[in-house]
Image (cartoon, rainbow, N blue to C red):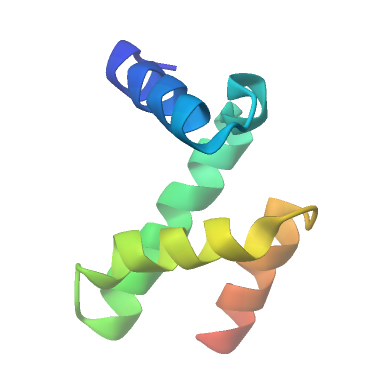
Length: 78
């Protein structure tokens, strides 16, 4: 994780009380989120939907697998 993102993760962990390790992003997580951002921007025609969709995915995730949520988004746009 790059330094800027690690600092943001640490700040979010401190503000939320969530352990920083729980906010780590794997390479697969990064790839999925970037793909979802791409889908949101291209399918909707609005780049601003990319971060908003990623936020919604984060809010929805809980204990749900990120891949399952990505599949649901992909189904909704096909």
